[in-house]
Image 1: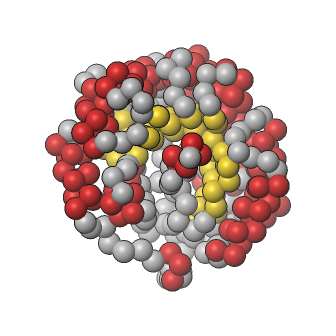
Image 2: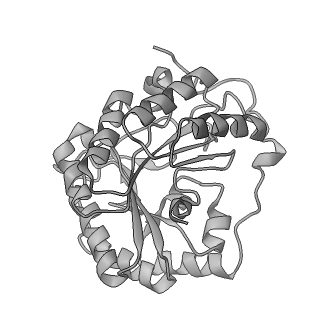
Image 3: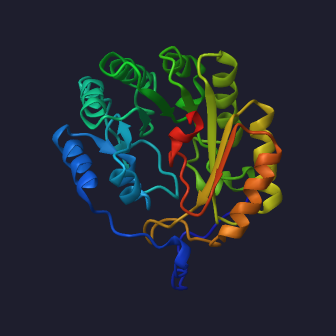
Length: 294
């Protein structure tokens, strides 16, 4: 097992120029922010401190995070609040999400969620209900569901798949060797591959998708192996982006991966014949997600 230091006496690495972004602003950004607040919704853009929030919100898109703002897991890279939601579910949330999609004119929505190990179905029913409510409100909207692993419960995953989102995404997060140091102890590499394989075999989604964070100490050979593992089970879309340490309590950045290295890794992925490979310092699993359909 490989371990990664959580805290170091050394000062944090200074971000290189290619990772610097403008502070979010603009009319479209303010409009999205207003609607999110009015409808009492959560976005992963805010909760995970995504560096692309200004660009995405400025373009009138966002990734909605359902099932509350408290995750039952504690991954060492993630800034989403951890705790126990005590089985509470907001059954009106799907309606509010659909209202936001209609009001903001979104034609492609990424729908994600905190992990809800406190629920028997892991929150699958709310996922499915939200997809169906969006389709009822905006018939031509495309939906990508970025789910957790449902603790390996494939019957729960089937509840989401039965709603037939265009994309089922589930992130490997990091290479196999670093899983135990990066993710919550209840998550693991093989379980995540099983989720992706089941989704692909179901035939109920157009694409399956996964993502890696880079800069945690992985090697290029390990990244290529993760690509091979994903492609072997039919994953269609593979994305890679730079890990950024959200607070001093989280994993340190081991490497700021250069744009040139990302370009090289994208070429490796393209050669493996994925439908789409997205790789860049600011890439995230939901960044420009709609482009697979362009």
